[in-house]
Length: 417
Image 1 (cartoon, rainbow, N blue to C red):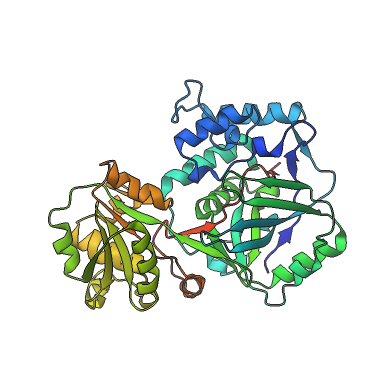
Image 2: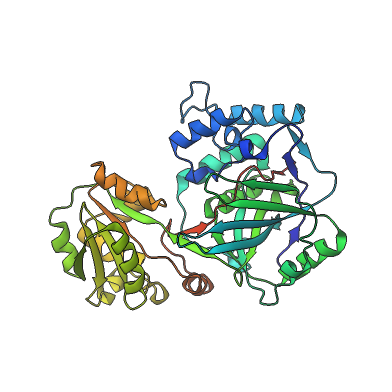
């Protein structure tokens, strides 16, 4: 049984702060320049907790976790952060427009979810994780005894029971638009009837971790380190119905090393078609990928790569399970990055000589600035593929997917004490 409970929520005191000034994206998508901008925006921006600086203002100072703890305690003492009176689930609407102007509203809710080991099959991962981010988040959790960000969970309910039970006529608890233009409307749910409905709907579901694998495994580690702490058995999570609007972005692969005969190596397996512009490339990737494994390549020139050769032999060599062999990222990693470019598995996991970048424009900019040799631009992943892979007990390569919109940090904090 999946165990979902309301939060003993800590939130910003909106009598003391403007929510626009204190919210931030998740820590892992905040680049250095943007972090500085958020630091200056408000003395109380959540970035000072999720990406605290050390005393010497360097990113790797050992005392940045202690500084986050002190800041958290100070904000609570100053009543900048306050605890809600009643156990609460926060219902979240995220309204945004796609690049082609389509208006989408993604619905979901924030609650506590009992942590399950993956062997239970109640909560399924779909990506591999890397050690560095997990240790960083564990250090922060240990120092502050709180979850500052949510795990992004997906479930399936064709009847949309929870969505239909919410009172959208009530006054929002929070209504804030982020820097990407996404409007976040939050309603408080603290009536027993709706809280019980949410628990009942979720208890027999299988949950898929869409985003936040590092945070979830960090929560598992924290729970294991503190078996006496009942609060540590739960982690703050966001739940959305996959029958609702769910947009998934790819994560692109950036090759930093010089690869001799790059195009010749690629042409062993792919048909290579030169295109005239970024816009044409992005359009052609999606069209081609519906028929055959395809991806883009930018080296200063734009190329569409369409898989020509059967690479099952290579995938057999690397012991790739059959359910994964239809993925463009698997073919890229095994046939090209591993076999042809010579990257070891350890280098790929550690991002040694290779980067995994969510921001599409950054993948192009790194080439134009001479910071990389090649950018592989991936097609949009499909939720049905992710489901199939997870249910088979397998995982996609690390940093495969990017669910949009991201969940804001600063909407709610979950104390672990």
